[in-house]
Image 1 (tube, rainbow, N blue to C red):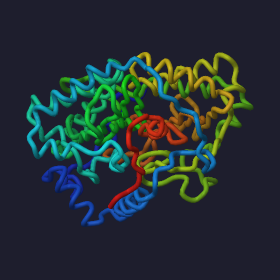
Image 2: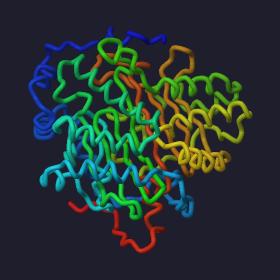
Image 3: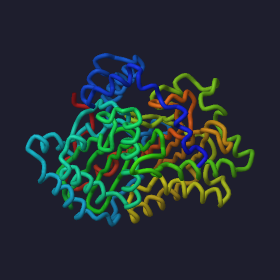
Length: 421
């Protein structure tokens, strides 16, 4: 790969106050100091903005502010719900009473929405893997493994290992490590009733809603800085390569007129961008943490206007983004997504040469995915680079967290999904 080892040119000075302080703190002290200290100011402002967004009743991501109805239906997706439920009960049986209380939330709790992907622990709920005994931690990982596809679980584990590698690089392993993730259960694990869980931390956030043999894994966020482990026991671990390769291949292979129509800005931080289109926290991302109700107008070109080979590339990209889903659920989701290709838009920001960093989005009434190369957060690269990658998936029109399915569940009391605090 062209960027192998490139990130090492941007290793930070670990003697600066940021890192010497971080190296002495655990995740809780680190978060407390950040929230109370308000430093840096833009991050504290972000935290306050997130809390404000959290108070909005859930609506869902839309393209124009209006939620389209009847897009999602109950169906048999052949999820191994008995195995998943058994894994959840195996975990619960090993928890103390205090841990059980900490991990357990109502299935309609608004705390579904309080996940976030930075390394600072802004919403400390559930149980944290790096504070568990090895057997309990193994049981927590067992729940994740039972739920995801084998390749999806491997991707999640790789993301966690890369986070651990980052912690070692900056000598702050109590804040960033392979197990610095929180797990929260929503509802009582059941083969018949709705329930789910949230797994979140730095660069890996998964929200999983389960009902019988159906699953919704949305929203999710996966990133890496750097996206390669080049030393140690997990040397060679790498993620988010196919999402990058396929996206660039699609853009490069379009006809020039389609490239011009898809490329909404030529530069990743373009002077022509409206105020707020680029920001410190998400950079070009529009649908990250706490952006549950974002209005994202369609941009770029429709997939249906593309040649057949280009549509096939779009399908390959989306299959990568659906990798967390087991095979049957993934196949059914792709069938639904393909049926909307006449309303599916592909847009691009930045150059599209082999070495260029870039952003792209694929968006339709039933799926929204984003890919973005970022500038450094722990590393020092001021400009976006291919070794720092953010990706995410949303299910528009109320599909996130299985919300569009909940009114369809017979015999279950539904509560309004709003902030309570």
